[in-house]
Amino acid sequence: MLRVSHYLRLLADAERSGELPPPPTRRGGAAPGPVVIWNLIRRCNLTCKHCYALSADHDYEGELDTAEVYRVMDDLKAYRVPVLILSGGEPLLRPDLFEIAARARDMGFYVGLSSNGTLIDAAMADRIAAAKFDYVGVSLDGIGAVHDRFRRLIGAYASSLAGIRLLGERGVKVGLRYTMTMLNADELQPLLQLMRDEGATKFYFSHLNYAGRGNIHRAKDAQFAATRRALDLLFEHAWRDARDGVAREYVTGNNDADGPYLLQWVQQRFPRWAPGLRAHLVAWGGNSSGVNVANIDNLGDVHPDTMWWHHRLGNVRERPFSQIWDDTSDPLMAGLKQRPRPVQGRCAECSHLDICGGNTRVRAQQVTGNPWAEDPGCYLDDAEIGVESAGERIAVTPFGARAR
Ligand code: SF4
Image (cartoon, rainbow, N blue to C red; front, side):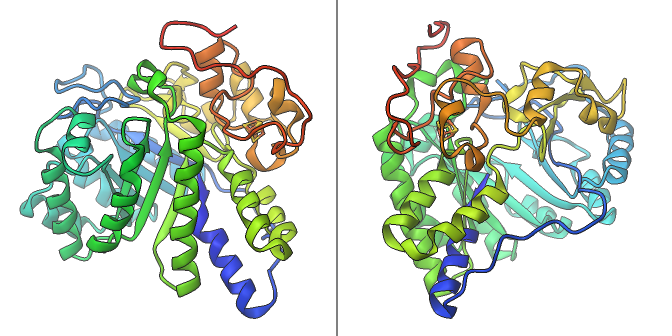
């Protein structure tokens, strides 16, 4: 995840003070554990087109019960996991969600909630506010009928927007989560405006990743030109807020080429700060699946991140999360933990590998069968990655067809 507003705030401060601080270095002591995205329930009242969990509106057998969740939580705390993002399915459908959230808060985790927003009426908003989530992300993929089409439910937009408003009225820190494909690329501008109008504090821009229904619909992924236009727009909004001292957050996810692209944006507008900013972006290091971000699914299976549900590292009923996470006997996990990662093709030659980290390995694996092939979702051209000609790009084939 690229914290765009963080870097642009550094830049705005540098413009004011004439100085860009060096990137932070980690002081002594054990490194923190990963951020854990925890799909506590797979059931969902929606069947969204890009759902990585392939969720549907029925119960799933064998999900972790409350006592098991608490046991895992104790292990996560001991392993220095700082953040839990409670997700689903639709997490509000889990009857013990608020008990779990309260326990997590009491244990000192930063606790986020990821919801589709459609079940947030006044009573639910009261419960969410009382639970004191640090942040609630609500998915919106467009305005009105566009969102409804994505979410496959007429009225989903109206319900989610009502939920966002009810949370805002109660002082909950709420953000919008948007996943872009060719079908909703034009919705970004109105959604950014909606964020302002509704007083939301965060905008999460997600590229499409090829997992679950997102993989089935990968042929609808945004074309590179549309992606670049979207990023330009997002950077302009984030820069305006950073310059004006507005505390709204803009982050992007699922395409770490956003890091080099942000650097390029800075080089064109503020060349004097580009080398310093580059050092900050290298310190970030790009994709952190299997390192700084982890996933536990509804059955207790552990994955390198939420997009790797087709790759199981172990189960928390059989081994503690901490042991599973440190175990590099799994070749994928070993590669993800390696720096630099053993990427191939144009990613191996790329002059920005130290920023991007080789991007999202899921797309490479889903399209070619090889998790270390170039990421077919990289929207930077050969000149931009510093190679003369990396040869023919791997095409994003429709679901079911392998490239090369
Ligand atoms: S070529 Fe690969 S490593 Fe370079 S920016 Fe693109 S995805 Fe990242």
